[in-house]
Image 1 (cartoon, helix red, strand yellow):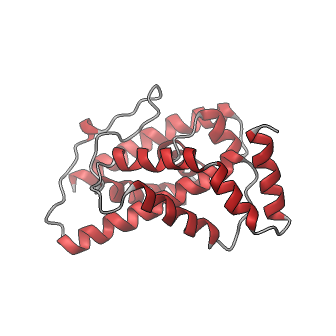
Image 2 (image 1 turned 60 degrees about the vertical axis):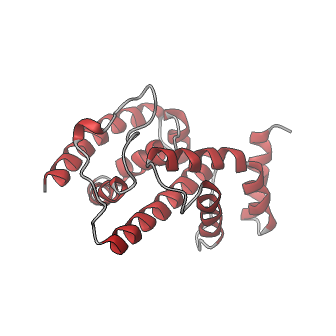
Length: 197
């Protein structure tokens, strides 16, 4: 049985009430999720206070504690895990900022942000504090265009490809591509105005 078939089987078992299936699913996808978590930490140049393993374990706890657990595919599960990682990193950044009262925050200019389909990394080379600005922008985008907000989450935080994002959100790859372009422009403008204030 291929990994994809095993994942599908575990998702079905979990939805049928087998609570152990989520443990098996997490174990099966552990390396992939670990790489995503590690990529997020590197992307945000975070110190070792919240290491990759801790981030991944907090993600597991957050996924298991969810009241609504209806994952339709591997991509959907990974997108959900990526979103959980985003929330954990945002909370961590806010807590750090509260502790330091903003003393260690540095402004990041728009020129420091990279928007590259080739590398599939929207915000490489920035500090973790920038994640708070991104979260605020994504919250605004979610109110106006929820689909574009989910696409940004999948692509930036999950590192999902266009096809994987389409599968996770149940839309066509061409819709993801169009929305990705529009959302990046909106996000760029929003981050630029947020950094100026």
